[in-house]
Image: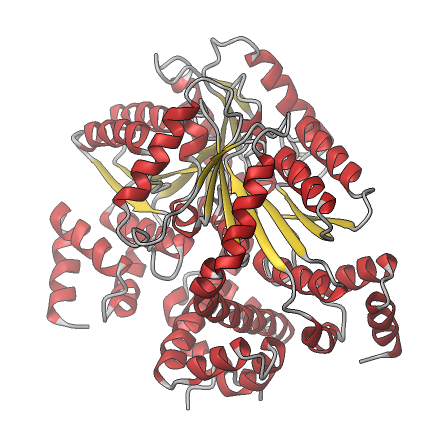
Length: 316
Length: 316
C-alpha cells in the first residue's frame, strides 16, 4: 500500500470527510492498492447497522430516506446514505429533485451522502455498495442507509447486502407495485406503506399481510407493516422505533448473516475472476480470435468455451 | 450425448413442437449433455432474425408483441416468442392477462411461445435467452421475438442479445419512462411510441428525437421513431415495414455483431466458471470455512479472496 492510501486512511480515521470521499472514489475505481486499503480498513468495521430501502419507482423512497435520516440524526446517530441512481437519460426532472433533497440532508451534522450510478461500477453494483458501506462503517457511522429502486436484479443484490431491509409500497401504483422483484419481498424485515393518506392504503396493508401469511418460511417471525406519510413525516418516528426494536431483537441480523457472507464471498471471487479473465483475454488475443471464429461460423461458442475453460480455470 | 438428446434433436429438426419444448426445458435446466446438445444444434442456427422488445411496465409490450406476431405470421413468417416474466408475487392480475394473450397467439400456425422467469434461470437470464433463441432458430423460426421489461440490468442484458432492438415508450408514464435503463436507449434500433392516441404522444416523439440528436454516437444513422396503437393495431404494419427495411439494410445486424459475440463468449465463460466454483466450493468445505472465519472476524473477506484466487484460477 502506498503512502497516499495510508495517508487517506489515517485522515479518514481522524474524521476527515474529504479523505472519506477520496477513499470511496479510489476504491470504487479499483485504483491500485484498493484491496490492501480494504484489508486495512476492515478491522474498524462491524459497528454500523445497514438499512436497505427499496420499492417501486414513485414510492417516495428519497423522501422517506430524508425524513428517516433527520429523525436518526435528531436521536444522536451519525448516518451514511448511499443513493443508487438509476442513471437514465430520461430522468432529468425527478432525479434532480431527489439529488437536491439529498444535498440538503448532506448539510446536516453527522450525515454523509454518496450517490452511486447503476452503471459504470467496476466489479458490479453490489460489490461497490459493500465497499462503500464498509468505508462509512470504519469512518464511524452508526447507521448506513442504502436507497435503491427495487426493480432489477442488480438492485435486488444491492439491497441484499444490507442487514435490515425496508420495502416501501404505495397505494394506487398498480403496475408499479408489480415491478418489485419477487426476491425482494422475501428479504423484507419491515414493510412500509407510504403515502398512506391516499385511497387504498389499508388495502395495500391487507395485501401485504395476506402475502406474509401465505409465506410459510417467515410464519414464525412477525414482519411489521408500518404506514407512513413521508412528505409530512407522519409515522416516521414509529418506523424508527420499529427499526430499533428489530435491531435489539438481533433477529434480522443473525438470520441472514451466514447467507449474506456466503453471497458476498462468492460474489467477490467471481467478480475478481471475471476481471482477471477480461484483462488476460483481451491482452493475449484469444478473445479476438474466438470472436472471429464465431462470426465466420468456423466454430461454435460452446466448443470455444469448453476449450478455453482449462486455460483459465485451475481444475486440479 | 445420450440417445435421449439425439432423439429429441432429430424430432425437433423434423418439426416436433413437443421435442422443441422438451429440448428447451432440458437445456434451461442444464441437464447433463446440454453443452453437447447446443454444439449439435449450432450448425442449424443463424437463419433467424432476433427482435428484442423492451420498455417500461405498462407500455403495452405484450399487446404489441401479440399484434406484431400476427402481422408477421400473416406475411408468411414463422415466429418464436420468448416472454420474460418478472415473476413477482404481486403480479397476479396483469400477468395473467398477458399470459392469456400469449396463449392465444401460441395457437396460431407457425407460432411458438415460451415464457421465462427472471429468476431461477441457471447460468443467468441472458444465457438462457441466448440458448432458447438458438434452439428456436435451429427449429426453423424466421423471427424470434424476446419481450422483456426494460428496467433491470439483467433485462438490459437479455435484450442486448437480440439483433434488433425496439424500445417502446408511452405518453404520460412519467416515472415509468425514467425506469428505462440508460443502457437500453443506446442500443435501440427502432423507437416505438405506443398508445399514441393519448395526450402527449407527439411530445414523447419529440423528446426521443431530441435525445437522438444529442447523441453523437448514432448521429450518422437515422434511428426511426414510429407511432402505434397496439390495442387497435394502428401503425403495426408500418412498424413491420420499418423492421424489414432495417433488416435489408443489414445495418443493425453487422453493427453490433462483433460486440455481441464478444459479450456472449465472455458471459458464457464467466457463468460457467461461477458454476464450477460454486460446485467445487460447496463440496470441498472451503466456503463453509471461509464463512465462519468472516463471521467470527478471524479473517477479512478481501484476504480470503486473495488467498483462494490461485486455488481456483489458472494464473500461469
